[in-house]
Image (tube, helix red, strand yellow):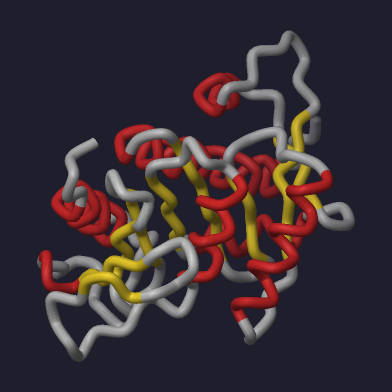
Length: 207
């Protein structure tokens, strides 16, 4: 990854915006740099029109390190990115989008997780089993985002997830990866899985 990953984040944001996964100002993307801090999309920015000034660089503790536009505020969900980077030190990028399907599937959960179908796309998320039984963790959507981040940290410290992704109830999906390329790939794979789940329900297919 480049020492300044903002162009990678801009490219991904535009693609996700065009796909309807980051409508308006929804969603947030971040990527780490060499000193361990990370660039994250600033709050309230239209994701199809980002420039390098529409980001803030923050430390793992949430301290603003660099702010090209002094009117910027870090994303409201920065604490979730902080939690992910702290929990998974090898992570270089963390992407969060708000697709329709990601919201819908959180209503098909069992307790605090979503059962994933045993389809080929799971291989792209690192699951190589004959008949995989994989779940994606689901978290409550608190108005206070720091409460979501705390619950993520607590649960994952006790038990690591099956896949590098999590859902927030009626909100969206967050993925993390060792590169911006892989994070983009994981978003595409999870969104495919969510579309499959919704379509399977519509036609009465069950696993």
